[in-house]
Image 1: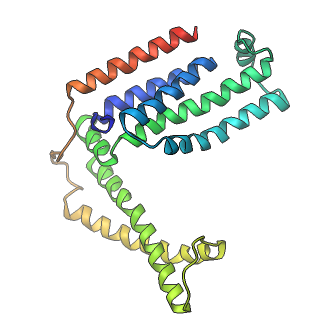
Image 2: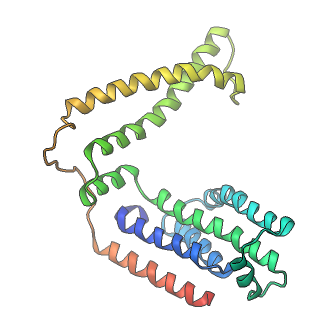
Image 3: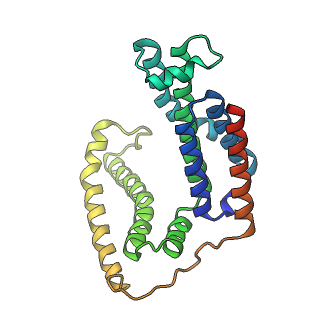
Length: 243
Protein backbone atom coordinates (compact mmCIF):
# COMPACT_ATOMS: atom_id res chain seq x y z
CA UNK A 1 0.00 0.00 0.00
CA UNK A 2 2.64 2.54 0.97
CA UNK A 3 4.84 1.49 -1.95
CA UNK A 4 2.11 2.60 -4.37
CA UNK A 5 2.22 6.20 -3.14
CA UNK A 6 3.88 8.95 -5.16
CA UNK A 7 7.50 9.37 -3.98
CA UNK A 8 7.58 13.18 -3.82
CA UNK A 9 4.64 13.78 -1.43
CA UNK A 10 5.94 10.92 0.67
CA UNK A 11 9.39 12.54 0.75
CA UNK A 12 7.89 15.90 1.76
CA UNK A 13 5.94 14.26 4.61
CA UNK A 14 9.03 12.44 5.89
CA UNK A 15 11.09 15.65 5.78
CA UNK A 16 8.41 17.49 7.77
CA UNK A 17 8.40 14.72 10.40
CA UNK A 18 12.21 14.78 10.59
CA UNK A 19 12.21 18.57 10.99
CA UNK A 20 9.61 18.28 13.75
CA UNK A 21 11.68 15.59 15.49
CA UNK A 22 14.69 17.92 15.45
CA UNK A 23 12.84 21.03 16.59
CA UNK A 24 10.53 19.51 19.24
CA UNK A 25 12.56 18.53 22.30
CA UNK A 26 10.12 16.19 23.97
CA UNK A 27 10.60 12.48 24.58
CA UNK A 28 6.90 11.76 24.13
CA UNK A 29 6.88 13.24 20.64
CA UNK A 30 10.01 11.29 19.65
CA UNK A 31 8.51 8.06 20.99
CA UNK A 32 5.26 8.71 19.12
CA UNK A 33 7.21 9.26 15.89
CA UNK A 34 9.02 5.96 16.32
CA UNK A 35 5.83 4.04 17.05
CA UNK A 36 3.89 5.57 14.14
CA UNK A 37 6.68 4.80 11.65
CA UNK A 38 7.09 1.25 12.96
CA UNK A 39 3.35 0.51 12.99
CA UNK A 40 2.92 1.91 9.47
CA UNK A 41 5.76 -0.27 8.16
CA UNK A 42 4.51 -3.43 9.84
CA UNK A 43 0.76 -3.08 9.29
CA UNK A 44 0.38 -1.01 6.11
CA UNK A 45 3.47 -2.16 4.19
CA UNK A 46 3.70 -5.65 5.74
CA UNK A 47 7.36 -5.39 6.71
CA UNK A 48 8.75 -7.90 9.16
CA UNK A 49 8.77 -6.66 12.78
CA UNK A 50 12.27 -8.12 13.10
CA UNK A 51 13.41 -6.04 10.12
CA UNK A 52 11.95 -2.89 11.63
CA UNK A 53 13.58 -3.65 14.98
CA UNK A 54 16.91 -4.33 13.27
CA UNK A 55 16.70 -0.98 11.48
CA UNK A 56 16.50 0.78 14.84
CA UNK A 57 19.80 -0.71 16.04
CA UNK A 58 22.26 1.58 14.18
CA UNK A 59 20.23 4.66 15.05
CA UNK A 60 19.98 3.48 18.67
CA UNK A 61 23.75 3.07 18.82
CA UNK A 62 24.14 6.59 17.48
CA UNK A 63 21.67 7.94 20.00
CA UNK A 64 23.31 5.95 22.80
CA UNK A 65 26.33 8.21 22.37
CA UNK A 66 24.16 11.23 23.23
CA UNK A 67 22.78 9.42 26.28
CA UNK A 68 26.17 8.39 27.66
CA UNK A 69 27.61 11.84 26.99
CA UNK A 70 24.73 13.43 28.86
CA UNK A 71 25.01 11.07 31.84
CA UNK A 72 28.77 10.69 32.14
CA UNK A 73 30.18 14.01 30.95
CA UNK A 74 27.22 16.34 31.48
CA UNK A 75 27.71 17.94 28.06
CA UNK A 76 24.17 19.13 27.35
CA UNK A 77 23.09 22.36 25.75
CA UNK A 78 21.30 25.01 27.82
CA UNK A 79 18.14 24.46 25.76
CA UNK A 80 18.25 20.70 26.40
CA UNK A 81 18.61 21.22 30.14
CA UNK A 82 15.84 23.83 30.25
CA UNK A 83 13.43 21.51 28.46
CA UNK A 84 14.55 18.53 30.55
CA UNK A 85 13.64 20.34 33.78
CA UNK A 86 10.07 20.50 32.54
CA UNK A 87 10.00 16.74 32.02
CA UNK A 88 8.55 14.18 34.40
CA UNK A 89 11.95 12.54 34.82
CA UNK A 90 13.72 13.68 37.94
CA UNK A 91 17.27 13.90 36.56
CA UNK A 92 17.72 16.64 33.92
CA UNK A 93 20.81 14.89 32.57
CA UNK A 94 18.96 11.62 32.09
CA UNK A 95 15.91 13.34 30.61
CA UNK A 96 17.98 15.35 28.12
CA UNK A 97 20.05 12.32 27.16
CA UNK A 98 17.00 10.09 26.72
CA UNK A 99 15.29 12.67 24.52
CA UNK A 100 18.39 12.96 22.34
CA UNK A 101 18.56 9.16 22.23
CA UNK A 102 14.95 8.91 21.05
CA UNK A 103 15.45 11.78 18.62
CA UNK A 104 18.18 9.87 16.78
CA UNK A 105 15.91 6.83 16.44
CA UNK A 106 12.92 8.96 15.40
CA UNK A 107 14.83 10.70 12.61
CA UNK A 108 16.26 7.37 11.49
CA UNK A 109 12.86 5.67 11.41
CA UNK A 110 11.34 8.53 9.39
CA UNK A 111 14.10 8.18 6.80
CA UNK A 112 13.82 4.38 6.87
CA UNK A 113 10.07 4.71 6.28
CA UNK A 114 10.76 6.53 3.01
CA UNK A 115 13.58 4.22 1.95
CA UNK A 116 11.67 0.99 2.59
CA UNK A 117 8.46 2.08 0.90
CA UNK A 118 9.90 3.82 -2.16
CA UNK A 119 11.24 2.26 -5.35
CA UNK A 120 14.50 4.06 -6.23
CA UNK A 121 13.75 3.94 -9.95
CA UNK A 122 10.31 5.45 -9.46
CA UNK A 123 11.82 8.16 -7.26
CA UNK A 124 14.34 9.15 -9.94
CA UNK A 125 11.65 9.16 -12.64
CA UNK A 126 9.45 11.34 -10.42
CA UNK A 127 12.31 13.80 -10.00
CA UNK A 128 12.78 13.89 -13.79
CA UNK A 129 9.08 14.43 -14.48
CA UNK A 130 8.25 16.87 -11.67
CA UNK A 131 11.53 18.50 -10.59
CA UNK A 132 13.31 18.67 -13.96
CA UNK A 133 16.16 16.43 -12.90
CA UNK A 134 18.84 16.34 -15.59
CA UNK A 135 18.72 13.19 -17.78
CA UNK A 136 22.49 12.87 -17.41
CA UNK A 137 22.22 12.75 -13.62
CA UNK A 138 19.20 10.44 -13.77
CA UNK A 139 20.93 7.96 -16.06
CA UNK A 140 24.00 8.06 -13.80
CA UNK A 141 21.79 7.21 -10.84
CA UNK A 142 20.17 4.33 -12.74
CA UNK A 143 23.64 3.02 -13.61
CA UNK A 144 24.75 3.24 -9.98
CA UNK A 145 21.66 1.27 -8.89
CA UNK A 146 22.64 -1.52 -11.25
CA UNK A 147 26.34 -1.31 -10.42
CA UNK A 148 26.00 -2.13 -6.71
CA UNK A 149 24.39 -5.60 -7.12
CA UNK A 150 26.72 -6.31 -10.05
CA UNK A 151 29.73 -5.54 -7.86
CA UNK A 152 28.46 -7.96 -5.21
CA UNK A 153 27.95 -10.66 -7.84
CA UNK A 154 31.38 -10.02 -9.34
CA UNK A 155 33.01 -10.28 -5.91
CA UNK A 156 31.28 -13.62 -5.27
CA UNK A 157 32.44 -14.94 -8.65
CA UNK A 158 36.03 -13.89 -7.95
CA UNK A 159 35.96 -15.55 -4.53
CA UNK A 160 34.48 -18.73 -6.02
CA UNK A 161 37.09 -18.85 -8.82
CA UNK A 162 39.95 -18.41 -6.34
CA UNK A 163 38.53 -21.09 -4.06
CA UNK A 164 38.19 -23.54 -6.98
CA UNK A 165 41.78 -22.87 -7.99
CA UNK A 166 42.92 -23.69 -4.47
CA UNK A 167 40.69 -26.77 -4.31
CA UNK A 168 38.55 -25.77 -1.33
CA UNK A 169 35.23 -24.18 -0.48
CA UNK A 170 35.07 -20.39 -0.20
CA UNK A 171 34.86 -19.05 3.32
CA UNK A 172 31.50 -17.94 4.60
CA UNK A 173 33.04 -14.93 6.35
CA UNK A 174 35.34 -12.79 4.22
CA UNK A 175 38.64 -12.12 5.98
CA UNK A 176 40.54 -8.80 5.89
CA UNK A 177 43.26 -10.14 3.56
CA UNK A 178 40.63 -11.49 1.17
CA UNK A 179 38.95 -8.09 1.14
CA UNK A 180 42.24 -6.43 0.24
CA UNK A 181 42.69 -8.93 -2.59
CA UNK A 182 39.27 -8.00 -4.01
CA UNK A 183 39.93 -4.26 -4.19
CA UNK A 184 41.99 -4.23 -7.41
CA UNK A 185 39.77 -6.53 -9.54
CA UNK A 186 36.59 -4.78 -8.35
CA UNK A 187 38.16 -1.41 -9.10
CA UNK A 188 39.02 -2.62 -12.60
CA UNK A 189 35.45 -3.89 -13.02
CA UNK A 190 34.08 -0.50 -11.95
CA UNK A 191 36.34 1.36 -14.38
CA UNK A 192 35.27 -0.86 -17.29
CA UNK A 193 31.64 -0.39 -16.30
CA UNK A 194 32.08 3.38 -16.15
CA UNK A 195 33.50 3.41 -19.68
CA UNK A 196 30.55 1.42 -20.99
CA UNK A 197 28.15 3.73 -19.21
CA UNK A 198 29.76 6.80 -20.79
CA UNK A 199 29.45 5.25 -24.25
CA UNK A 200 25.82 4.32 -23.57
CA UNK A 201 25.03 7.89 -22.45
CA UNK A 202 26.52 9.28 -25.65
CA UNK A 203 24.61 6.73 -27.75
CA UNK A 204 21.34 7.86 -26.14
CA UNK A 205 22.09 11.49 -26.94
CA UNK A 206 22.18 12.60 -23.32
CA UNK A 207 24.57 15.39 -24.21
CA UNK A 208 21.86 17.19 -26.19
CA UNK A 209 19.32 19.72 -24.93
CA UNK A 210 16.21 18.29 -26.56
CA UNK A 211 13.05 17.84 -24.51
CA UNK A 212 12.64 14.27 -23.32
CA UNK A 213 9.72 12.19 -22.17
CA UNK A 214 9.90 10.09 -19.01
CA UNK A 215 8.73 6.51 -19.30
CA UNK A 216 6.49 5.16 -16.51
CA UNK A 217 6.75 8.31 -14.39
CA UNK A 218 4.64 8.13 -11.20
CA UNK A 219 1.43 10.18 -11.21
CA UNK A 220 -0.46 11.80 -8.39
CA UNK A 221 -3.65 10.09 -7.24
CA UNK A 222 -6.30 10.64 -4.60
CA UNK A 223 -4.52 8.22 -2.25
CA UNK A 224 -1.54 10.60 -2.15
CA UNK A 225 -3.74 13.45 -0.91
CA UNK A 226 -5.28 11.14 1.70
CA UNK A 227 -1.83 10.04 2.87
CA UNK A 228 -0.54 13.60 3.20
CA UNK A 229 -3.67 14.69 5.08
CA UNK A 230 -3.51 11.78 7.53
CA UNK A 231 0.22 12.18 8.07
CA UNK A 232 -0.04 15.90 8.80
CA UNK A 233 -3.06 15.32 11.05
CA UNK A 234 -1.09 12.73 13.00
CA UNK A 235 1.79 15.20 13.29
CA UNK A 236 -0.50 17.89 14.69
CA UNK A 237 -1.94 15.44 17.21
CA UNK A 238 1.52 14.33 18.34
CA UNK A 239 2.63 17.95 18.75
CA UNK A 240 -0.47 18.74 20.78
CA UNK A 241 0.09 15.67 22.95
CA UNK A 242 3.74 16.61 23.51
CA UNK A 243 2.72 20.04 24.75
